[in-house]
Length: 140
Image (tube, rainbow, N blue to C red; front, side):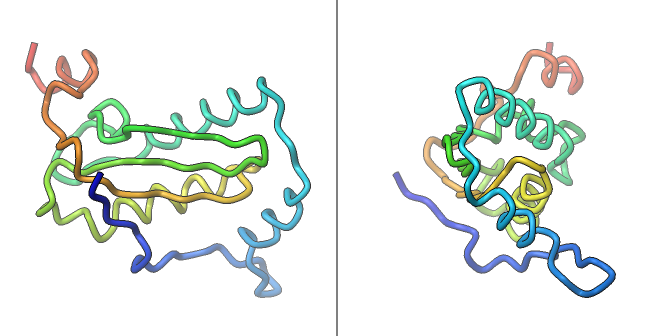
């Protein structure tokens, strides 16, 4: 599988009033966390809800229902791994959307470490959209 990571993306982290990085503090607090099966499922559902707050700037449907999120893996250590794609390799959101997704997931209280990886195979196509997305776009 060919993939392009988001290593070059700048991430804007929230700072506390004293200048400390909230994301890094949260990760340190959760360092010893171990999730059971219910915790893994709950965190995965939170990640899905976060994905539903992210939109491709050219299509008025969230990236989860659009079918751009291929895989969400949550480890017992609270590490979250997301494989996603974009509508095409030339999509202008390639420079912003993966970083936005990663940043929003990092803000989840239980997420310890987050990795968003952009993949191009399999290529996205409209058949990957949910029924609700197709209905919203007038494709049904």
